[in-house]
Image (cartoon, rainbow, N blue to C red):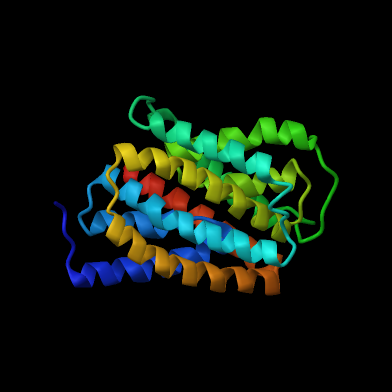
Length: 252
C-alpha cells in the first residue's frame, strides 16, 4: 500500500488550495496538483486518478459559487453537463488504449495560441456577443469533444472550454468562466468514476486535498466575480502559457 509522510501530505494540501484558487478563475489547476502528486512519489496513473478526486470538489465549489450569483443556470445546463459527464467517463476508459503522443505534441502550440488570443484580441471582456453556433450544435460538438479530451488527457481543458464559450457561444469572459466550471465539474466527475475502477486513487489523500480545493475555489470564484475579465484574462494567459512550457519541458 502506498503511503505518504505528513510533510508531503501538507505539501499536497497547500498545492490543492493554490490549484483551487487558480482553477476557479482561469482553469489549469492540474498544472499545480498533478506534478506535486508525482513529485511526492505517487505513480502516474494513481496520481491522475487522485487528482480527479480533489479536482471534482474544486470545480463543484466554483460552479455553485457562480450559480448563486446567477451567472449560470444549473437547470438549463443539465443536458450539457450530462453529456460532459458521459464524454469524460468514456475518455477516461480509453486512456490506456488510444495513442495520444501526436496530440500531446500539438498541445503546446494550441495552448500558446489560446494565450495569445486572450492577450491580444481586442473587445474580449465581460460583455456577451452574438452566437456563432446554435446551442444545440454547441452541445452536440464542443461539449463532448472537450469533455472526452478531459477524460483522456486533461491539461488545458478549462482553456478549451473558455475559448469555445467565448468564440462559439458568444459569452463574456466571466459568464464563460462560470459555465466552464460547470462542465469541467461534470467531465471531471465522469472521468473520476472511470478512474475509480481502473486507477486506484488515493481516497484519503484526495479527500484532504479536496477540502483545500474547496477553500481555494471559493476564494478564487469570489475574486473573479468581483473583478471579472481584468483578473480572468491575465491569469488565463499565464496558466495556458505555463502549461505549454511544462508540456514542452516534459517532451524534451
